Amino acid sequence: MSIHTGKNCVTQSTRLAGLMLGISLFYAIPSLAQEDEIIAGGKLKYQQYCATCHGPAGKGGGEMAKLLVLTPADLTQLRARNQGEFPFWRIYRVIDSRETIRGHGDRKMPLWGFVFQVEEEAEDANSQEDLVRGRIWQLVYYLNSIQEK
Image (cartoon, rainbow, N blue to C red; front, side, top):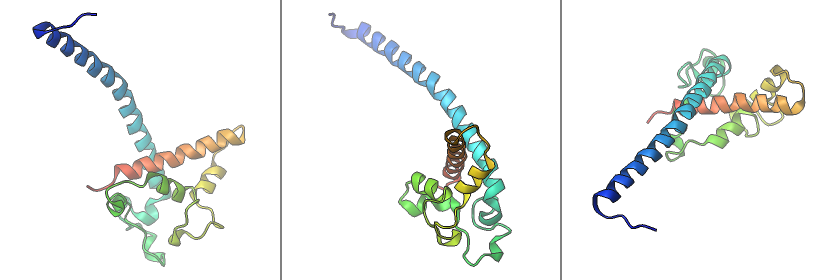
């Protein structure tokens, strides 16, 4: 065991810190790229399934909004309405129809989870469920990305 003092200790600490930073950046960059890919996929799904009511920017002014009894929510304010925390799992459950939203109907009327399940073709039920989860995950990540500060 050796004890380092003075300049030698600082140099080794600096090297170790540099190495740790390099390792963390190596692993962080692919995950940032993957997150961007997830968000981009979610944006496409949002435009296809949600924008007609919630508007292209998520503020609730979609072309179908005027035909609805209840005004669609401003989806850019989810974090603000939840004490600064994005309600990831609650939004996930809303999209997959496990959580009731007045404007969407009750649990007897499945929404996007069911639609995605019908649209996804897979060799078995587990693969199909994974594909549905992936679609919902993308939407939730996208909604998190459009939250106003």
